[in-house]
Image 1 (tube, rainbow over the protein chains, first blue to last red):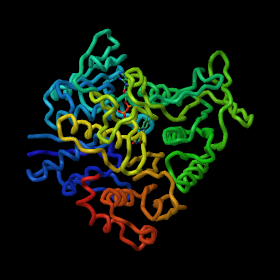
Image 2 (tube, each protein chain N blue to C red; image 1 turned 90 degrees about the vertical axis):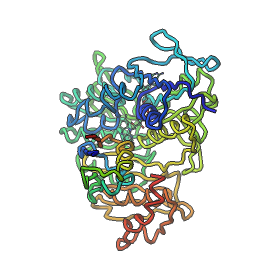
Image 3 (cartoon, rainbow over the protein chains, first blue to last red; image 1 turned 90 degrees about the horizontal axis):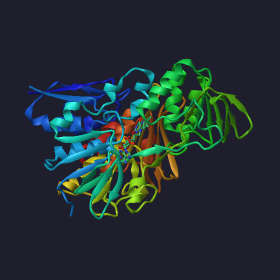
Image 4 (cartoon, chains in turn cyan, blue; image 1 turned 180 degrees about the horizontal axis):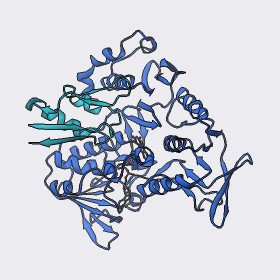
Length: 66
Length: 418
Ligand SMILES: Cc1cc2nc3c(=O)[nH]c(=O)nc-3n(C[C@H](O)[C@H](O)[C@H](O)COP(=O)(O)OP(=O)(O)OC[C@H]3O[C@@H](n4cnc5c(N)ncnc54)[C@H](O)[C@@H]3O)c2cc1C
């Protein structure tokens, strides 16, 4: 299963990941920093998560296939 | 028609890197070569005036990708090699290593170069700009020992530097030629807020004031004399007076230039085999209804994706909604849309407390929103503007109006324009 990792120190609160995969990413209301809702990505969410990693302006999202 | 035999990308900033990556992500199988004029591996610039400058992050955090990425994606990355000439008729590039490189399609992603100060003393030791990792290393080292810091230009980068300098115990003098700070891209309330925010921290702003000359001793800067005759002692002078599009290659090739390499809505230049992306190009913006040249990560990366789509044969006009962020110390400024003049401004949130948004309307239409520590306003604004869902000024300014919920309803439509 695809595993997703988020580096909150790199996050610039752009919210791109929330647009791409709202089931997997959310944002803190106070500073906009992204939060991960789940680490394991079920098959139906893989495309959205890949897009999130691609469009993150700070490259804060990494994917790990196992 | 785009010749897809091979693609050469000149420049490995955000737009060049994204173009190469998106080509492979979209299934392009021909050769992809990226000419990176810099000696370092391709890297992100925004942290240079933020976490990298404070020392919180290092070069590895700046890199777009590890070395093995380029091999895995079959992208030929040539660090330290510049394109020096284009032969558009023969479709070849002359490179700085003396070789000739043919291309099927050429993507210019050459970015910008800092506008240089021209007053006497500008080339003194201690007068520095902030564009590259070498600049940031130099400034970080100087911040440790310098006693008097002067900043020339109160734009985003100048002020981000100010926030870092203040955190390190300095109280810089800032000279700004315009009557207000951040005047080029932010609204008046945002300018006023940051002016008082930094003044409270001891920063000495001189507005409507230019630099007259830099005094030196033995080639080292010792003071800045401003246009009002005031002398500011200075052993570190950080210059942030804007950037100019890097168009020299394009000019040499005879491409149309208009405040940058001029491209159409598909990012094509006046030569059908050459496109241009990112900071270096100007293009007709559907958002603004005019030709713009933007300097932002959003613009650079969305251009990269758009040009890749064209090269693989699925062209779509570039229509993304512009957005931008800047970290001013611990405060975050975010901008959605483009403000080329507005006739109505509505404040949402707490202006005095430094958590507010400015909704800018022109002719009744929401054109831009500046947010200071209001990330959810920013997200909502982007959703609404991308989906072209109107928001009334009354609702925008009403603290009881649930903007986030309202904008979420527009989510499906907004996702495409995000
Ligand atoms: C300090 C700093 C802070 C910033 N902060 C933010 C921010 O917070 N948010 C934001 O949205 N944007 C920010 N920006 C702007 C953002 O970094 C730029 O918009 C972005 O880098 C543009 O990408 P680009 O690929 O178009 O150009 P660049 O990143 O400028 O890359 C162009 C590259 O092309 C190379 N090149 C040029 N000519 C040649 C040639 N002939 N041959 C080979 N290579 C060549 C250059 O060496 C350069 O590496 C910041 C910029 C700086 C400098």
